[in-house]
Image 1 (cartoon, rainbow, N blue to C red):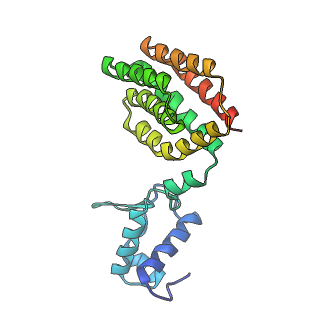
Image 2 (cartoon, one colour; image 1 turned 90 degrees about the horizontal axis):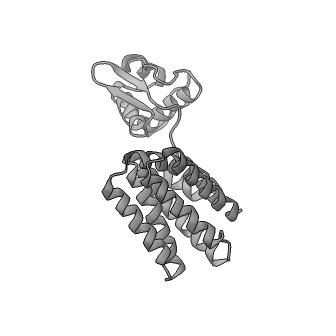
Image 3 (tube, helix red, strand yellow; image 1 turned 120 degrees about the vertical axis):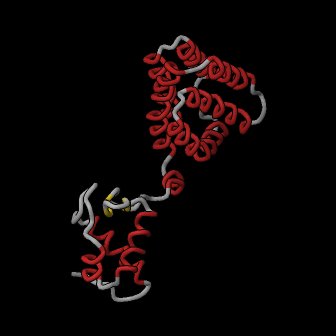
Length: 222
């Protein structure tokens, strides 16, 4: 069995543990052997094993549960979210937005409060009245879509949407500057219909309208 041969020992031990997890030695949710077993296998002391486990716990791969042991919570180290979005093509980002916003629109129709609906209507009005720069128009559009997601009253959906905004914003600005855009009248109608579906608490219609709008946007970006 492979053992640690060079410093830093904890880093090396963490990498060896991760390799064994990736290889399928322990499945998702499995409990790791104790420190007294892992130490000799890795060729390190118990304190080094503990530090290696702490490293992998910090990366979301392991979880130490008081009195129960150490368990596998992921089968690999997740890539930094910002790096993923930076590398992803805009079409891929739009496809992910469809998954998020179609669901958010449905939940917004079910859960929106009078205050949330007022915020959506206000952002819709601002979006339609925006006659400033391209950047100002895109920002107004982002505020409208964020208001819809916020009305869904799901903090995870909202955080996911917010993580997309920087990547999406620049792509939308670039698209408008080179003249790629959906028909303005159809675009206005699509957003207006979405507002009214949410106001009417029609979750199915709100979801389908959100999806259709973003699919149209995706086609325009290709």
